[in-house]
Length: 326
View 1 (tube, rainbow, N blue to C red):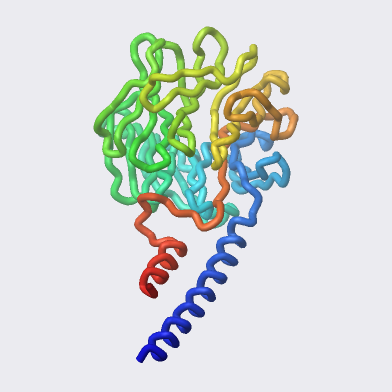
View 2: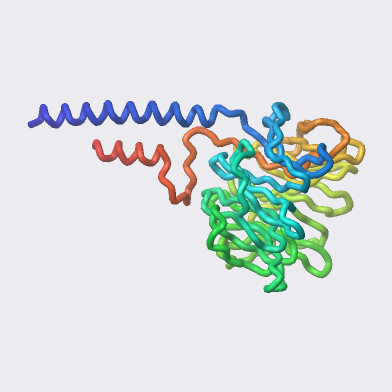
């Protein structure tokens, strides 16, 4: 009896090691791609979506239209990019495409749908919309295939960003004197105001560790990059110069922030990267006669596990197999 149990365990162990090696090879092949940044460029006379490696090299064009495409945002697994387009006459809508630019499909059919933000668990896309019948612009959320659209909050200002656990959404809202950064639960409840200086702000980006929200703000004069804690207690300025600095996007490891600046381009916006403390800075995109904006950073990583994802990851299946052998 003991011999049969031992042989069974050896069989399962061999099977487990085979599945583990195949999973690692598959994950490694997917993660072997260089970390990439999707962005919008006007080098063709209107907005088009490009991707480039995180060092600024290997730039590839994904969209080819006679109208403007902009605002790319990666799906957490790196296989899809949601973006905004004006290709439907008199409308602005959200589309999704494969990461190589193929299979472009429309997700929304509203009059003005903008600023998509993919939840880190890959299940939802939050966005800003102006629905004519409703007459009030607001923050909406939908499933990643465009179904089950739900309004979360009336809001006259646009940009938003999910917390890394998919439980909260940072957004911008307008007051009489200016705009401020807020955060709320993913269902629209528990709204908390994070900034209070009544200056213009926008484009929040939640850090991968959940400890900071980067944003661009015209606090004290120039448009600079700031970070604020999710409780609003800590506010820090990261850039300090006479140029326009805006649209921060965190690297997946939280060590770097990509952003847009015209500091080296003579009033032409280009993508730069700096350390998370703002100490070291480098220009990434080309110094040409047009603008590169809207950076969104991706690195799929090795064996990703999204905390609230409905899909079961390879690693989760292997862990269950191990527990079944014990």
